[in-house]
Image (cartoon, rainbow, N blue to C red; front, top):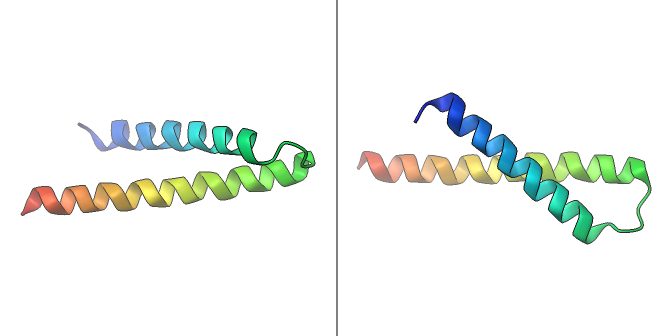
Length: 62
């Protein structure tokens, strides 16, 4: 798989998970707070997914 395909899949998955978590957790928050939380969740999921991909890549190289 190409790196662009993997990156696109990570972004789509992070966006979907962030929106889902935002919908479940912050029902009565103002719009500004929801925007900040979306960014926080999005980058958190990106970091987590990249860490998982790095571990899988490392284990495949051995």
